[in-house]
Length: 253
Length: 253
Image (tube, rainbow over all chains, first blue to last red; front, side, top):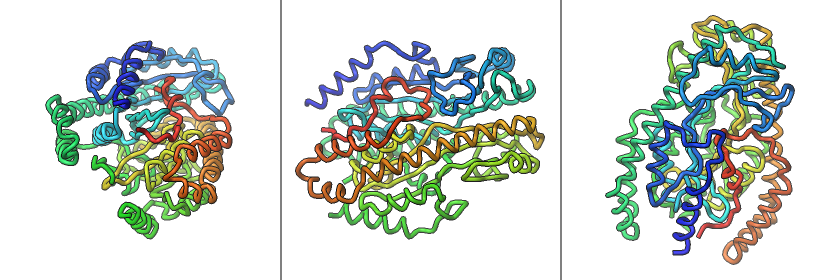
């Protein structure tokens, strides 16, 4: 019971906290997922980003790119336009870097099994860098992460190093990645809804003590059916072992 | 006892398996770490990469970059030279992409506590995208991952889009990231050795049933002392919650 109360308290504190991100609000393309997760009794989100295209200006000759040393010249959570990027790049006085960063979600889970369920959904939706972390005092966090990205230096000491034609091509590549990113988000949401259907949650609570394996196998089958093909970019060290890492949700003995 | 035998069997099978990576051997800069981890009774590596700089040629107009659709024009696990990259780029017939990929390790762990220990070491060493995954049949895998990368399109349909001066600058940036990567590997190795000292392992086995928390707190303190500063690039959605994710290794109730 103590663990239950603790999770409830954490959830209440977290959802009442101010949004401390630069933007100060939930990104539109993950608003549904965030809302859905937070309606579950077993999960709540601690941070989220639907994905973004940014141009940041770093201090020249600094190899450790820390957030605090950079100024943001441009940011969008949608597709971008070449003219906007070119205009922003003119303001660079250091080393500007153009980046595509995919969707990231951090979800705190009541129990490890809840994290495993979410992990399975994430992996099957293309978020192949997802993983569980254990925080202070037993906080269980599932980080939903993807591998596809762009990181492209465009200027050095304020001097632009590439042509406008290159920027035009780069913007096209970034926008394609944003398209793929949105597909993955949609896949994740559909898969998640299927895995956390209300009647299933009720069943889960009833059957929790009697037959855990049956419940999770049913969910896993539904996850696989609804996920569809995985068009994700694989991590470079993904050997056959990564394919073995589909989360079976069987509680380890 | 059954769980113990299972882990031992998995370890034996894994270490006897052929190396199916492109390279076919362990990368030099992680050879020590891999060897050290495999000497532990609680861990073994399932895949590893010390980090690399690569130029891959993808099929033009394909948005889903799958490994099987790409040819490798260039690869090195050390710093690279501009002339080598330029020469390799001349062979591009599709969309060539220049990438820096940091060190990645996958380590199978006997118990969740072993994964938590490794996770704490990884995070403190700068591998901030590390996380635990649960595989089939209860396999516990800790993935050691970093965030810093480069992904730079350089050609389209075989036509090079950037100048040699840009490639020269890009190579400098990639080499700086490789330097930082090697520092993190060294930090990780030192921290790991400290956390898995032989006498500590023996103590761990004896005290396992009596006072888990004390053992883990000692290790955690030593991990923090030996880790030093974290020069890692933070994930874009890292809010204050990410700072809370230092692994305390307290078993959750």
